Length: 290
Image (tube, rainbow, N blue to C red):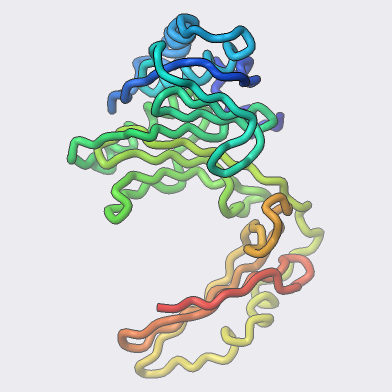
């Protein structure tokens, strides 16, 4: 397990990564305040999980999942069906997936915690302030014993009705699109989900095209039609990505992403093109409509 995966693994649960079989369990909703301390929560959750009527082969995974639920302020009790399978039934990714009532916990094949989801998060109707949301996120990070610094983004999305918190993965200082750690909360701070992703990546190119060279490969950025009533923008960003049309297991590659946009009155549009940062070959392209 590499250093980043190790840093993101809940330390008290690292040994309980082999899940399997079926058993029973139920959960209640977490409180917005979370647990008092990660170590205390993990030990009490293990004791709770031990009371579940389960086959020995299921115990490590159920105890690990129950400890996570407890650390997030939920409780686990005997009596409801529990599902444990070898592939995520939603994404079909291989690994280990455990459902305890309304909670879902998943590990990848390397044993890294990659997904927690609470399926029945209710909200009081109140909305946390930015500072309150930051404090709530810090409490969740502490309760799960994750080694994470300040997030790159903590944003309230009124349309989606949630707080979205992101720690993007970076390779060689450049963001890897879609990879990293994220946490989602309801407006009043109820935990909804945790996600961690770390995709394989190609080696860093020996030589990286300059921004000027990358822009020169995109004619629209060189042939502006801006005028008194039309404004245009052209941005260039180095980013690790996987081409849209490629296989899901294709490694990420470092690309220059050139994004062109225009606006004229109420109309707007643009286009986007991704070039391999080393060779300059076109990797992906798309139109952007208003």
